[in-house]
Length: 201
Image 1: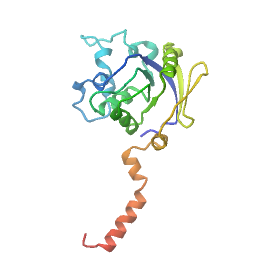
Image 2 (image 1 turned 135 degrees about the vertical axis):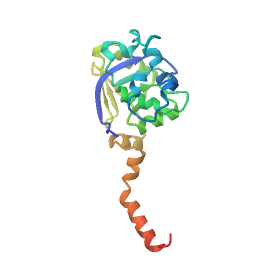
Image 3 (image 1 turned 90 degrees about the horizontal axis):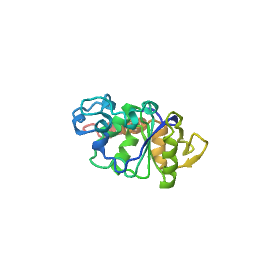
C-alpha cells in the first residue's frame, strides 16, 4: 500500500448520517474482485441521474470537489453490509481520508487494510470541519498522521486519536500481507529449523 503520512487536499462535505456501504458502492458493482475501476460507481445512485448524466447537486460533481481527497461525513459512516468494495471505491476515486463522529466496525477495519485513514472526532469538531469543507475550492485541509492533527484552511487544529498499531501500519504502507512479510526472516528461520528437526514433515 501507499504509505499515509501527511495529506493536503480538498475536503468535501457529505452531511448525511448513516451512509451505508450500499450507498457508497451499490450492489451492481460487486461483480468484480478488482480494486480498480470502482471509482466510477462511488455514490452512483446520488452522483448520477436515471439517464446516466451527472447530478449537478451532488457534492462530488461540483467543480470544487471533483478531485477531493478528504471526505467529511455524518455519523455512522460505512454501516450496512461488510463489502470491502466500499473502501476500494473511495480509494479509486481518490479519497484517502474520511472524517466522521463514528464508523461501522467492519468498514473502519477495512479502511486501514486499504490505505485509507478513518478519523473519529467529536460532534463539535465535526461541525467545524464541515463548515470548513463547505468553502468549495478553499476547503483545503491537511491531515498530519504523525502529529495526529487536522489543520483547517484558517490554521485551526483538531487533534485526533488513533490506535498506535494501526498508525504504524498506515505510516509504513502495510496491509496484512506486508505485515507478514516484515517477519519473513523469522519465518524462513523457523522453516529451516523445522526441516532440520523434522525432515520427514
